Image (cartoon, rainbow, N blue to C red; front, side, top):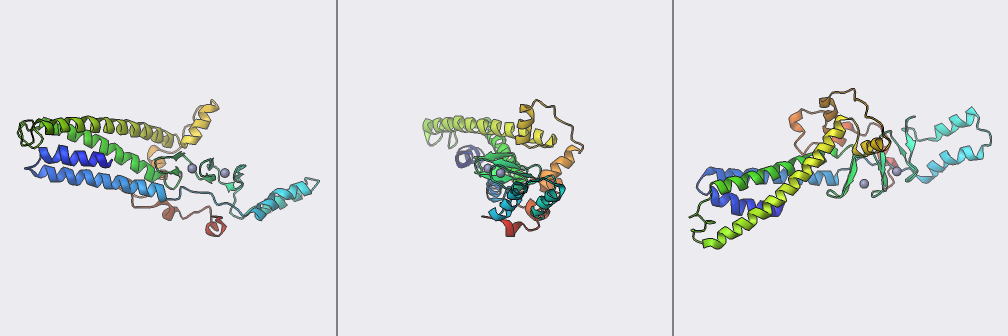
Length: 280
Ligand SMILES: [Zn+2]
Ligand SMILES: [Zn+2]
């Protein structure tokens, strides 16, 4: 991406728009979007995706050993076992067999993080983090900005060749001769390939993400569902409501800004004793 920035500014914008305000405008605009993309990437990387807190082992063995020691599985022992669960655990929660933590309904286990993640979408090597309930918004923002950057870069390449000045800095008849124009051609090819690859890739990811959000399921859940051969159920909520769930309750124009955080707004409603229970 830094390469794209260098090529766009040094070879496309500056030579073509030297004597107009458009040059300054494009440099400013392109770098602003680049900055927002970096910011969204950073947020997606450092935001807790919604890690389900791990429980202390003694607390857990109590829950699991009790029914074994009791030979008769009467109703009484059942209620006993249930009470031993941590107080914040709802009835629809399940116990993960891999990391042995109680998790809310839509949490999934990530093999790379070795933890259960709330509404886990996928583990993203790009952001070196899981994409889950709390950072999916920033992941979407990152995808969005990279898409804009790719389209913007291609647009600038086209305009710079439309306004190509044969007597300018990069022109064949300019002060630096044909070599400058050859370098510009090489940079154009590289940047076009880079932008097209990134652009198509984020377009595919964005379609996948939006489809999953509108179906009210995560990418993990849609893979599981397709594997089981089930038809998707129609979500009861409107598309706008579903997007709101991922991007937060603010006005839709705030969704694209990578500065608000979901964790603060939702305040871990399901984990009243969250911090004390963290085992990290
Ligand atoms: Zn787990
Ligand atoms: Zn992960």
